[in-house]
Image 1 (cartoon, one colour):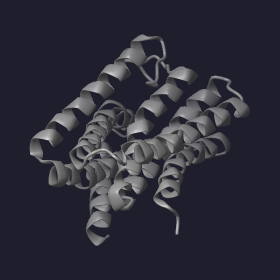
Image 2 (cartoon, one colour):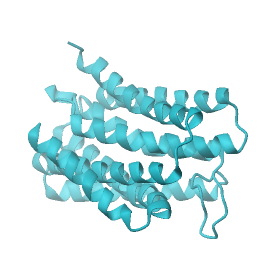
Image 3 (cartoon, one colour):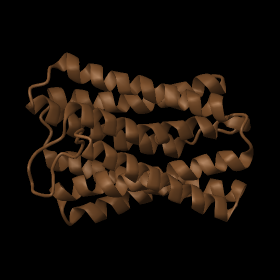
Length: 246
């Protein structure tokens, strides 16, 4: 059986490698954008359910309501501020602007994936501190949501003329950072008081929820329109079932 330290690292690496898997599919298989969007909508629903029942509920149970509310709000604010700095700093991550022009720089896409991935993987390490167990629901949710992100971004990078070495080097580097983020979540926060760990979980939930609303759902809706809500709900139900049956 893996030690908590190795388990945290493995979970973070698996989360990051799902981006590489999505990139591989997009590079060698021409997947319709509508299919990618449907998977993204499903992943958004899975994430919403997982952060609700595995992060926010757990944070409230161990840390109380007020710290949880503050943590969720703080996570959302920090994510939105960093995302805006990324956008206005010339590193566009969004595939389309309001005017409809195609966009998204390779570096911007990579930085955006890191911005999404750090709270998602750090919280996996936090969940293993103090004798806790890895949340399978969170891990599955992150993997499912990362695959369409890797697919969509890689399709854009390939169409812009980027080489396979550049693309897979980019995503492999992000996968390593995700593993280090999960490792850091365990190693650096293991000695933090329970209330502090609850705040971190709530903070991650707020950041992830802001990311879903700002990035995943708009990107999915642009392709699937009215199907987006239904598929997102199906993802939510699937994740909730895993939570209850687990």
